[in-house]
Image 1 (cartoon, rainbow, N blue to C red):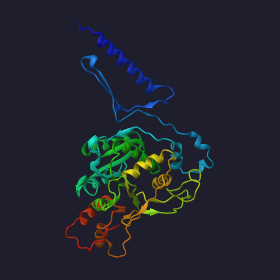
Image 2 (image 1 turned 90 degrees about the vertical axis):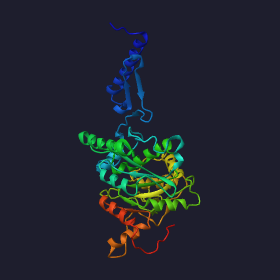
Image 3 (image 1 turned 90 degrees about the horizontal axis):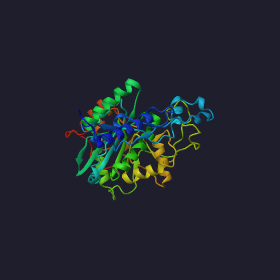
Image 4 (image 1 turned 60 degrees about the vertical axis):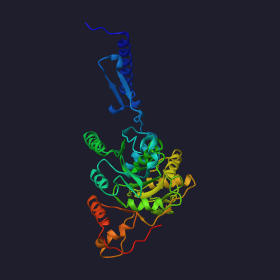
Length: 384
């Protein structure tokens, strides 16, 4: 008959205590404690109970459950607001969410941060698998260009509920196994949460990739000529990412939309002023690592806003910084003054930095055409 040593007995007591704590946290009556995911806790049982290990993952801290702020329903005319805006207001105060997929070594670990010259931060949704696949094969391909590294990250929330949500999350997990390029948090990935997504990323960047020199922040349906971006950034007087840079398609004195039928609608209760500070279109903009971290610090004292690109302008304004205009960033699309646009479009795109927006098949085809060595175009003009 096998007997237990004192060490085995002590291990059993510790294990039992841990399990009881987890049980009460998960099933307490008031349901206001911590959300635990299966990936956050690992209990490793060995034949020798004294060697049993309880592992809490370093990069997946337990996150307090964020409850809806029901007091916002007392706001004037709240009942007449669109449902999406109501949902935004209920959870506007929530700043932390469980991380489902992490990339702790994306920037090379302790010795490799400086190797990232341009970090591509691409806003995507679990539903947009086809877009991510095309980008990995075209402008977002991780590579060495002009002697510097381009790295890629997709940032996602979650979509759907129940079986549909789990199905999409499973798809994203499989992508992560193959490509190791996804950051995902457990929040509802909708238009009004783009600002939240951006701030969650900046927080991750501060912890895991603070020395990335420059970032392209863009949507997963833009055509980005990342080779041109490298050349533009390398030609800057200060190109180590330690100085302010925030450039794209500039909006100045842009009016706040008050029409409830628009997805850009913002009620007076969220923003009293009728115009935004200067900002760059959220489809895509370039910024330095210095500016990204400055925006994150400023955001800690500015309530989340439902329009993400306007919120970037607010944070810049608070920091006493200004965005700038770049002629090569076309977030409102490409306006070509010709009836033969299909034949000339590759020549226009060859000289630009970014154009919004493209379907996946068109994106793939256009990338091939722009890089066709036999493409005949007028002499190139460098963008400033």
